[in-house]
Amino acid sequence: MKKKNSVFLIITIPAFLLFFIFHSFPALQGIFYSFTDWKGYGDWNFVGLKNYLNVFKDERAGDAYLFTFKFAIVATILVNIISLLVAIGLNSKIKFHKTLRAIYFLPYILSILIVGFIFNFIFAHFLPQIGDAFGWEFLTRNILGNPDLAWIGIVIVAVWQAVSFNTILYLAGLVTISEDLYEAASIDGAGVWTKFWKITFPLIAPFFTINMVLSLKNFLMVFDQIVALTGGGPGKSTESISLLIYRGGFEGGEFAYQSANAVIYFIVIIVFSVIQLKFLNKREVEN
Amino acid sequence: MNGKKTSWLVTTLLILGSLLILFPLYLTITIAFKTPPEMAGNLLALPKSWSFDNFAKAIEMTNFFNAFKNSAFVTIFVVIFTVLTNSLVSYAIARNLHKKFYKFLYFYFLSAMFIPFPIIMLPLVKQTSAWGMDNLIGLIILYIVFNLSFNVFIYIGYIRAIPVELEEAAIMDGATTWGVFWKVIFPLLAPMNATVAIITSLGAWNDFMLPLVLLSDREMATLPLVQYIFQGQFSTDYNLAFASYLMALAPMIIVYIFAQKWIISGVMKGSIK
Image (cartoon, rainbow over all chains, first blue to last red; front, side, top):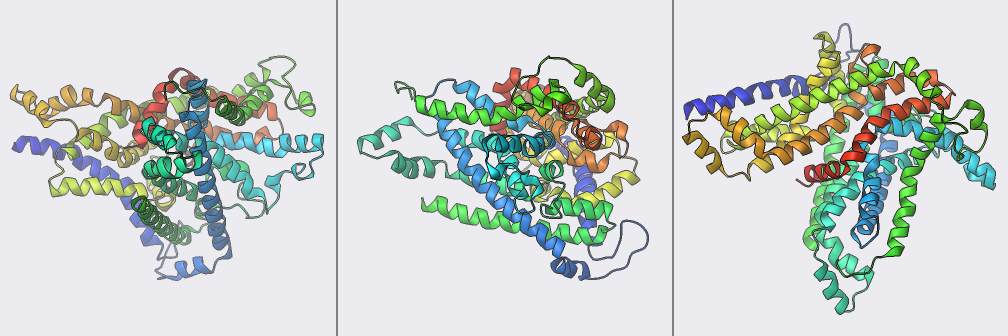
């Protein structure tokens, strides 16, 4: 028995050390440097909470947070509505079921960055061509070039891609619901709407919770789509928090400052996830 | 579901929806074969001739085969070592969860899932470049280590469902812990190994952010990173750019066409754990 224990330790201790060195230690370092004025090179001094106070006063950071929240909330809601509809469709009696399922899941396996580049072209050239051809004024200009509309382009691409994964999750939930339940409800005279709210939705509530939390968390970290579509522009109108940390930290000599920003960002993500879980769990119980 | 009539309305709606997904790919394929003068015409039209000139030019310009080799090298090693090591670590933790240290490890790996990458990004890049890990080997090691967080979570759920009696019987026959794992447990983990392999390979193949911040040498760039690096040089030669994008997307699409059933069910299993 003694020997068995030592084998388990030989397996887990290196794993623990590696994880600590490459994950936890950098995280702790980030927190440590967030209280200094380090530029990423040279000398540094402790500056207390100065970086944190500055992040709160920084208009660029404020805009990045507002943009990221706006983007993430809208994209989360859209992805969940569309995925649920697609999943319900795929779960009903249809032709070409396997092929359709495979097509709807396809975006998940594609590189987000490359998909972004392809959509960049669609927004810049294809949609304006359609706009010209049909005389639709609103399509004639590239929305990615408009500071007020560019975020919508990013939402479209993010939703286009994320629907795939969320649909599969909802589908996993839907197939567990027995058809008998719907038949019994039909006999009682329940309509489609009633069946959805009284049977389908309560039974897939746990999947709804996972999907909402995961999508929001992923969208709050949005990076690839923005690099491919707008690079944060026009101006700084679509600069997400991840992109700001990347730019400021690597290109702007703001190592310590962006570390403070990253810590705030981390706290925000945790708070969002916890609130969401609390709220959604309560719903689940009530249902 | 049986006996119900096929809903043609739903089928039609789903087909229309699927066009939205296929359309960008249609555009990618046709533009990759077109010539710049053709771009002035109707973008929806098929190319006049199916010439591979754009592809040949893109291969030369972006050094495609080098990038492909880098991506394949990283993905293959990450998948193999992630499956082998992460399953082993998960097994050690799963069978000792009643002990404090292992319970701590479980929650330690689990909680790391909530830490966004940007928070560790800046110090991590400093550290890895100081240690000469700003290369493909460094990238592979980081993926394998970071994967622990999610994989420990899904493996342990699965391992806990395997009866301990199986291992005890093997130990009676004189097998060591090591032997028990590789001969008894690892084969039983096959469905989970497949799931982990699929999710890991998609992640490693398509990831952009870690190669972007970690790799210092252009020669080491992976496929998505190469598209980013050459974006400026493609400039307005969209035909060249799209030929390059298509080649970068194609390997995964080809794998998907043949293995979509396993990929979908693998991802499904991993996500409902």
